[in-house]
Length: 104
Image (cartoon, rainbow, N blue to C red; front, side):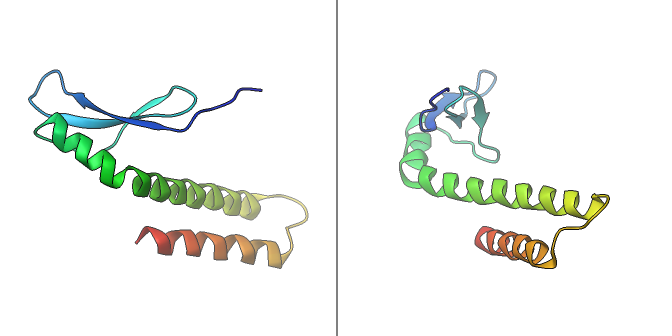
């Protein structure tokens, strides 16, 4: 079984501009540029990482949870045969609502 490490954040300079961005390297080595962030210097990007990376991870986790719950609800709605108990659908909806409230 593969053992994944914690995500790591690093500033990266854009090749075609004098701008810096923040890149997350996930435990499975996939790299993701954080959308909407551009900095004028490496120091500014590093400052953002130091003060915002943990919060960004928490919000990203909530977004992924909300997407997963949404997919489960759609699968339950589209399912053929016996439908899941009402209490299961209600619990999934409550979880989705709670995750959505945290994103606001």
